[in-house]
Image (spheres, rainbow, N blue to C red):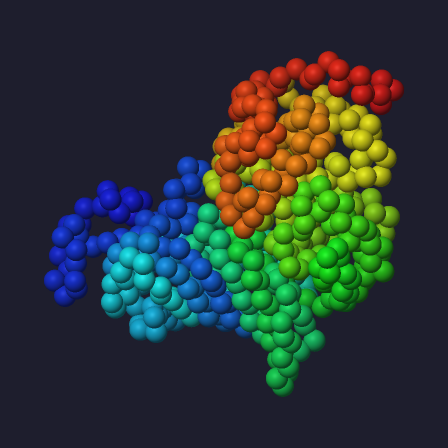
Length: 475
Ligand SMILES: [Zn+2]
C-alpha cells in the first residue's frame, strides 16, 4: 500500500521498458486528502461518469459485473488507484487495452499499457464477479455495502461502502454521473438512483436501465433488487416522484408517504427548488437496523418505517431535506458532516413542528432539543472525529445552531441565505467556511463568532434568554 502523495514518492525501481519522467513513475495518490480517511478516494484524476452493468442473481446471491469509469487525468499517470474490495477481477482495461493491476487492502492499483497524460480523458473497465459481502465499517452505525434480503438485496454505503461493490473514487469530493444497467430474473425489479429509462425483457431476464444524470457522491449510489409495487405521483414543477413499496405494506406506505409532494413544495419555497430532476422513495422488504439513507433522488427506508399512521413521517422529511443538504451540496471533508445531518435534522423538525403546528411549536421543540444536549462534547459539531460522525451531537446541536441562526437573522434573511447557499453550491462540495462566508455575505451580518461558539467549541453556549420563554413549562 502506498500512502504518499506523488510529490513525496521516491522510486527505487527503474522501468526501462516504459517512458518514465525524470522524477520517476507518476503515481496517483491512494487517498483524496480527507483528514478522517487517508485511503478514501484517490488522487491524480477526476471521475466523470460511471456505467455499472450488473447481472444480479438474487436466488444465489451472486453478482457478475462490469464497471466502467470515465475520467480525466489531472497529472501524468503511470499508475493510478481505484478503491475496491471483494470479488474476483477477471480483466481490467484502460482505453480498451488490457492493463496490469494489483490489489491491496481496499486499493486497486492500475498500470495502463500507455501512461496517461495530464488532461487526457480515459476510461477504465473492470470485469468482476462473486458473492457480495456486506461491509462492517467501523465508521458506520449499521452494516453497509451490498446486503442480501429474503427476496433480493439492498445497498446502503455511507460513508465508505461503495467500494465494496464497485471500483470507484470513493469520496464525495469526486462526484460523477451514473448509468445503471441491472439485469435480474424477470419478476424482480432493480431500483437505482435517477430516472428509469428502460425496462428491457429478454427471455427470463429483465434489464433495468437507470439514468442518474445529476452529479452524485459515490456513497449515495444504490441498487436494490426485490419485488415492489410502483407508484408515480407528481411533485412541484412536474418533478416525478416514483415510489417503490413492498406489497405487504403498500396500502399503509401510500398513506404514510402521501404528503411527500406537499413536503417538496414547502421546502422548495424555503430552500429553493428541489435540486434534482426526479425523486422517489423505496421501502425495503427488510429491517436494516432502524436505518434510512438519503441515497440520491431515491432514499431507502426499512420496512419498519411504514406504520400506516404517519408516525415516522418526519424521517421522510429528513431524507428529502438531505437532497438539498448533503446530496446536492456535498461535504468536501467528512468532518463537515453536520452540513448534511444538522441541516436534515432541522428540516425534519421544521416539518414536524412548524408545518403542522406553527413556528411557536418549533421554538419550544428546539429549546427542548437544546436542553437535552450535553453541556460539553468531545465531538464538536464541525469536527467530531471519524468515529463520531453520526453522533447525536452532530445532528441535534447542528439543528439547534440553525434555529438560533434563524432567530438571529430573522426568517426572511435566514431563508434567503439558505437559498443563496444551495444555489451557489448546487452539485458541488462545501465546507463549513463556505456556509459561514455565504451567511455573512448574504445577510450582511458577521456571524463568524456565532458559528465558532456553536459548532467549533466543545462547550455548549447558553441559550438566548428571550428564546427560553418560548418553552412551555408544562412540557
Ligand atoms: Zn440524515
